[in-house]
Image (tube, rainbow, N blue to C red; front, side, top):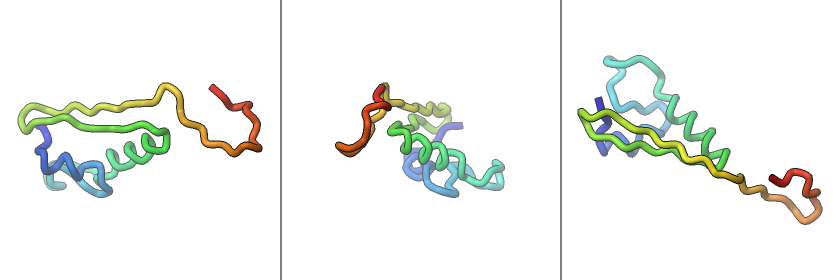
Amino acid sequence: MGISKEDQIRIFDRYERAIPSSKISGLGLGLYISKQILTLHQASISVKSEVGEGAEFRIVLPLRPKIERSENQEKAYEF
């Protein structure tokens, strides 16, 4: 189906959809929740799409997460 450029901007927002609810089921939370989880893991999600061409979602995960710690914390959790 594809996603228009205008819809690509908002599909990662809560309760948003690229297609009207009369044509597809769901609450519009799937991409929002995915983005929230990925953000917490210092990762990202993006979409590349043209109407009528389908959609490609890309997830980028960091090789090594950034660990914030104070000087007093042990270094037991280094990767």
